[in-house]
Image 1: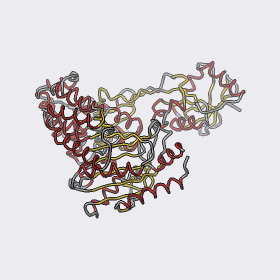
Image 2 (image 1 turned 120 degrees about the vertical axis):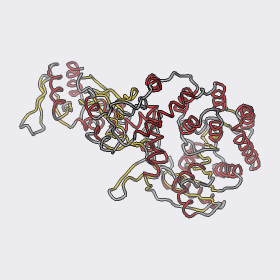
Image 3 (image 1 turned 60 degrees about the vertical axis):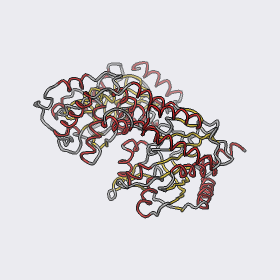
Length: 229
Length: 362
């Protein structure tokens, strides 16, 4: 049997992951046609490449269907309850940096902290008759963060893309989303709360804690970790 | 471990007991309106309840407790006074405590009555205790109404009191507000800058979103008003602390609270209510000399209780959730009734735990 390594199947994240492993003597490549999700590994024995959507890698690690996987801290913590019991970080890859933050309209000159957001939410609910809407796709992380911060009278509305546009489109009053440079936020007239950092994320190599390894697999894991760990 | 059939039989036995005491048996649907529960408890309930959906009815929740549907049913068609009992499964997500059950049975006893609150509270407490007689249980009691009355009586602005009332059930936020209102923590730099600005609304940032300029201006006015108000005195904060730190058997707790009421007269009526409850419990044969009272009990896990609160715990089993919990929830009936509420006291028993404790003992 082989060690299964899950890597994002598309785009810059895949290319940068391939580069990172390559720099450590483990060559990853896609094989077959451009559209076929098949890959090959050289430079280390007994490792198989599995190309997956980055969003599915947490689930596959937790189920033990892959032994190692590359994905963001944000996705691991959003998708897995008690994530630290199911996976452990092996190495931070130094790219894919992104912060999950809470942002509000820049014109809200009265709101700079979570304390302000909570007070504004209470007044908003009284005025408009519904709880202040925060658009996000990171429901669990944001809900836990706001609960621990003591923010009430808000609701999370699901937004799977173009989240920064929801405020202008009047489908949300604030957002919780990933940002790297903050440019999209500024372009949409939003600002980050000064204590509104939910999580700092980057592409990370994770090891599943739930897989049992055979003798040959253990040797392959050891050889791989010696190069990249 | 008891099996499901045994737990159902125990639930029916308990329900029949309450029925024999004059309670009417009621049924409620498993699927509840997610909107109602979310508006009551806030977004946090999503972390504790199962949400499901279909394209026709939208979001629904698997019943996380019976109280809300029983209150709704009573408001719609109930006569007064009323006693209800029910049994059935409730569903709770257990991400924080994976070893706990996410589906379990509850048997409840709820009393809706405008007369003699102390007698109603004593009735629910003793009915529940009597149904669990023979188990080695420790009772914990508290009274959220004392803290609410204390906040009402603080010598500070209405706005600050409203903010504290809103966070009664979030102890950390409540604490942070007390610290800020009493000047124990510095004003955040961004707040100070905003307050120092003569015309903070004059800027060239485009307006986006539904929250209007008038709302922003109103909040700035509120912040200015707050900044010009005197800080909450350290003595008053100490009184709140003293109230929350009371942890005694009932007679001693009552004595301490009477002392606090000398400096904080707004809690006098709530303290008198506690004294009346002691009398009512004694009249029903409860030994109040050994009954514990905690000033902060029920603030974190029982969001809708706003007066008397209690829990019955298995002695020597801190790993188990309480076998029974209950209390007064007048404000919940008012929230569900659109302003018109009815005084209500109720409690639930977990028959699965009752059986586990009986098995463990013999």
